[in-house]
Amino acid sequence: MSIYSMWGALEIGLIFGLVALGVLISFRVLNFPDLTVDGSFPLGGATAAILIHHGMDPFMATGAATLAAGFAGMVTGWLNVRLKIMDLLASILMMIALYSINLRVMDAPNVPLITDPTVFTVLQPPGIEDYVARPLILLALVVVAKLLLDWFFATQVGLAMRSTGSNPRMARAQGIRTDNMVLLGMAISNALVGLGGALFAQSQGGADISMGIGTIVIGLAAVIIGESILPSRRLMLATLAVVIGAVLYRFFIALALNADFVGLKAQDLNLVTAVLVTVALVIPLAKQRLRKKRA
Amino acid sequence: MNLHSVLRALAGAAAVVGALASAQAQAQSVAVTSIVEHPALDAVKDGVHEALASAGYTEAKGLKWQFQTAQGNTAIAAQIARKFVGDKPDVIVAIATPSAQAVVAATKSIPVVYSAVTDPVAAQLVPGMEASGTNVTGVSDALSLEKQIDLIKKVVPEAKKVGMVYNPGEANSVVVVKRLRELLPQSGMSLVEATAARTVDVGAAARSLVGKVDVIYTNTDNNVVSAYESLVKVGNSAKIPLVASDTDSVKRGAIAALGVNYHDLGVQTGKLVVRILKGEKPGAIASETSSKLELYVNTGAAARQGVTLSDALVKSAAQVIK
Image 1 (spheres, rainbow over the protein chains, first blue to last red):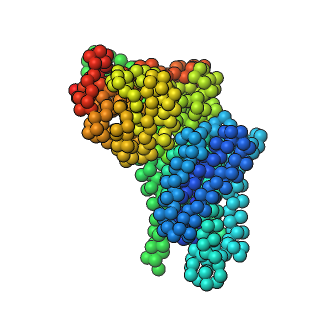
Image 2 (image 1 turned 90 degrees about the vertical axis):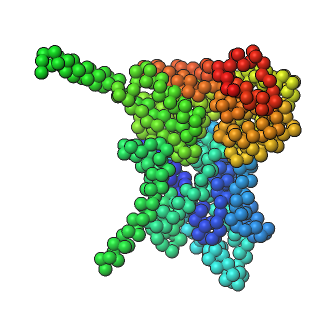
Image 3 (image 1 turned 180 degrees about the vertical axis):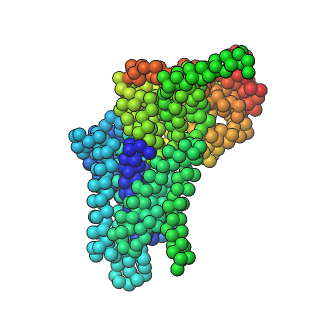
């Protein structure tokens, strides 16, 4: 594996680290199976790309994209808590609606950003190659996002949100307005995913309507890989674990792309990735069994 | 062992050594990526490989050829782009818009040849169709829509309303729809659109056009091409003539198609790759469009869909399917 593809895996892994943080909030903290992310990831990308394309400052555009995706998440929450639509279905409805909305936002299926300024071109320090600068910028950003989340979940509101997910009846008995907590949590979750989408579009040369396909699968894989390599009930460690999980997943893909020397072909890529992830998940279990046998 | 066979063995060994030496002299590497495995895109890849082989660049002579598809996933397309840039091949060939954008965003120095991109300028791969001065050149699969409209008129001379089924999420199709909205009124026709965001929606989209249109035209939309049989069902039962742009669709039940042969498009792309391998700068090579269009007609489908094709049209076809 070349240095270049390793930096690339780190870069894309960190972007999906933001997605994984979002998925952690919906699936684990709120206990809300949320498929909106397949639509809010491209919504973030589409909004950022079209605004930058029309000359907006890339930072403002990224902020607007994050807000737009957060709003989309809030609508999913609203469909669930106010209109009493089952959580999974509410998120599916929002996901398919966002497909059309994203096409409207971009007014085309594809908005290129190859020649426009992006947050990465603006922040890139002189003397550092762009393929190194982008992951470093993202690393700083993901660390900030992780610390902010850790801080938030230790505040009164954050704790209320966690109790909403783990025991809603108990939470309501304590005077917590659980409906509002779902709305807020879904907004934060999808805002993080949208931020990821906005950064992805800016680092990959443009937004495309197909960029959201499978986002939830990758996000969930990252969460589960993270949990299996760093099992912990502490949220501070869980937020770290899912980011590591997202980066690892990308390293597995980079590894699979280099598997041609054993006679594997291009179309085997997804299978190889699945096998690598399975191996990573099985190792902790195998270790445990080995230890039991010895004892 | 007599002298004769010794000499022959020596000559053979010399030939092997000579071949090895020449392979050393031209050990070149070409990395090819496409967004998804798809008959047309695979034909492009095979065409590139063939053009390289006929110019003497084969794996046997030391060509390093690698091919990766992103399995339809843009994040994987980005990772493939990074891997290729890290491998530093002599030329990267990127097939279809998302793959081409990912590669062009990842390198400003390695020569990139795009292929099967309908509008490379709108995709910001090149500033214009002339020589770009950058590391990028390639072949567009844009079809002259004037010729497509001519074909529609030849198949259904009295057509007033042209229906079109397409995926609103495919950049290539949206370009065609926008242009047809402008061009059709100039020939006294109008466009009626039906969108199919997934392959399973193609049949329903086609049914929604029944009674509203005189002919259904389709471009090389991936969803529509994948599910063309469901369009044929509607065309046959409602007697709506089908005109396609993908020549393979004619074998599957369209009446006619004037299309790019994607294998030839790949060969054309491969010729650009060869020019770069021989030392030309990609920035000095103008982008090309497909030089060869082929007309396919299906007289059996014409009968089923209620039209009779003129003898002139059938005679001008490269291939007639009964």
